[in-house]
Length: 137
Image 1 (cartoon, rainbow, N blue to C red):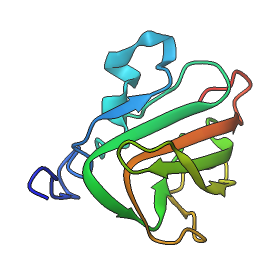
Image 2 (image 1 turned 180 degrees about the horizontal axis):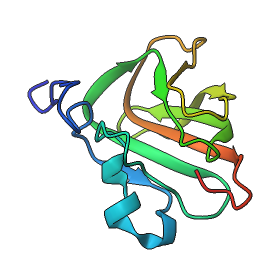
Image 3 (image 1 turned 60 degrees about the vertical axis):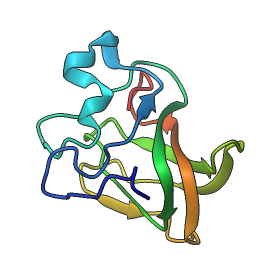
């Protein structure tokens, strides 16, 4: 698809030059904790949600992508006990693909091994239960 960006793993933000949305940003401080830090490749930055249950990240791809696994990394102490992966094609409703019970660690986790390769235009990860007392991820 000519609209699709090529993944460039060594360039900050190169993997995901697609529209993304998040449920919230810590203290509405978009500069320091906003969605632009989700895939910037820096160990010094990250997206931080505000307080509350069921925080989420949605990616809207410019053309269909095949999803077979998810690489996810949390800031220690701000993990989710349950992550739900949902996806759909353009014009369809999100459907549940898989659930993940990640570890509360700063390590990169490769998950959703039971996922069959799925073609999607939209992907949502919902963080249902945070290890943080205030529900932040």
